[in-house]
Image (cartoon, rainbow, N blue to C red; front, side):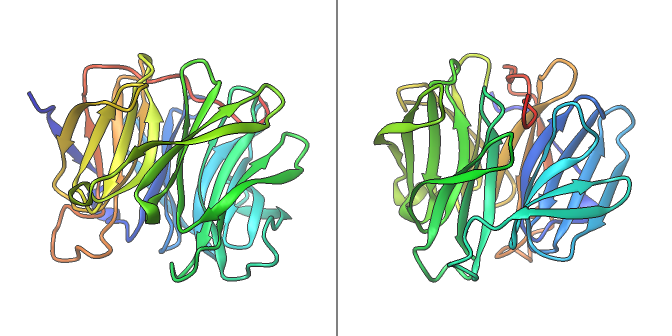
Length: 287
């Protein structure tokens, strides 16, 4: 049976909603509208929402352990962001040789490092890469070349990182060592044409992956071997990412994009689903 789908934060109608992340210390779900550009949040206690505009495309936001500020991925590179002061402080640009690129999607691994993909802003060049930002605010380019680097998530034990090239319709898996090095790159899953393109991902407490389908109007659950277990259709064609949230990590929130589906009122909304499984506790940068 398909879960009940609730539409929340419909008023924002994101041009390109992405990067949902649960921040328990604030009891809020944050997500971004890359092309507005803007930062959105939802208070899970009372349902109140907020939105703040940004001066440049914003790919993701991740809290910093033991601090009130965040790390954000911008077109110009990595930066810190103080929400209360509305202040951005640059960290650095991992791709100065690609001025038309922007950071696109990111997650934190079990050692507190950020893994962030990049892409060509206009999607007309194969210029994306996978970068690792360490807690000392230094970074390394870990892999490329990607059309649209997207959707990192991790295995239950943290020893595998999954990362997509959406343009190639492929989800890759790498072995992730304790020191942050990668090896054993392989194709974990190739999307058939009628699935659309793989976008953002998350891992549940049973070690299964939930993947958003851009152009496929759904999210899918796959086991650690890449076998399809479940499909959940959504009333928006361009589904972008997902994250578990709430005190019990039992509420799955899914972002979408109005871009390319402007005539559909549900496109660009934030969806909430009860899928009968729980997620993993979120991790902060440097934690």
